[in-house]
Image 1: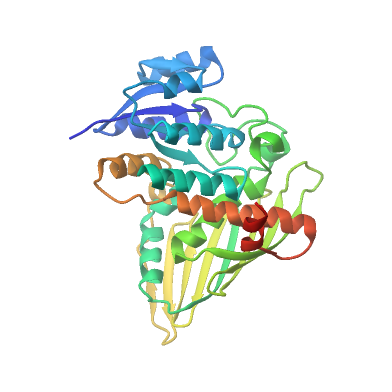
Image 2: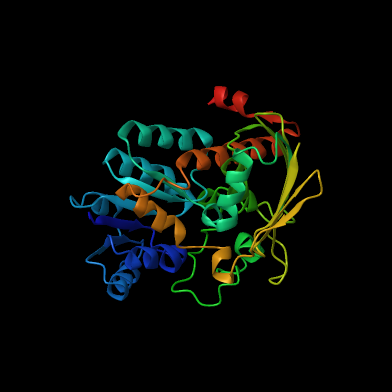
Length: 356
């Protein structure tokens, strides 16, 4: 079987935690090159992970003739330019969330990947859980009937990162290989924004992942609580079939109180997921309740799954489980929410697209 030869752009704290170990452990992948902004750091990464090529130049990495694919785990402000260059070079691309700064940029990447028949995958681990895949199957098979409403509450204790108080990961990861770079989360020119770009990017993509429906309109309110970045978000999203979505999210929560509650209300049944707790139930209108087997702790947030799926999709073994179209749908919601928070009115996705 073919070996997928891969490079990693932006070998920082998340790439060294999730992506590099995933590639190194895959029997049909070779980690050929890594890039980071600091020469000393990238040389150490190359030694520790056994990578033959290391450097600070993205162009040098992309010019390696034997490369098949790249993982882009750099800061969001450079995602678009790096992904576009990689796709233009004919490389498959896995890109971290948030996909880009704007929906127009995300759309351009999706179209370029399709034109060149390349895999483009957005790194959202929750798309690969046993519950997530079964929930999507049930919804899209019609087990819930027509989807009328979705309620989402998503919290994650990263307010210190978004405020720039320190750079230590506060996701509950006690030990990391390297720490996040200063500004990577708290400088809007680098990160795009706060909670809306960093975490709502997950929840926004999950809506289309589950339902197959794209967003049509967004009404949003943000609270920055004295920070340059939004820390509290409340969104009302209307999907293309008219379904109403209530999405609330904050980075300000105790380490022990993470929530990711998703409630999907259909005409025939209600599906309830607790993603951080690994539980899922389905209750129909005959009061028949199905409780699905709870996820094991290591299944709840499968950090290595996007890279592993990326490799298998390139090899043609399985479908792309988190295609770029989901990142585009997420960026449509994020961009419309940012505009709505400034305009104090609902913003239609189509109108914003026409402006672009």
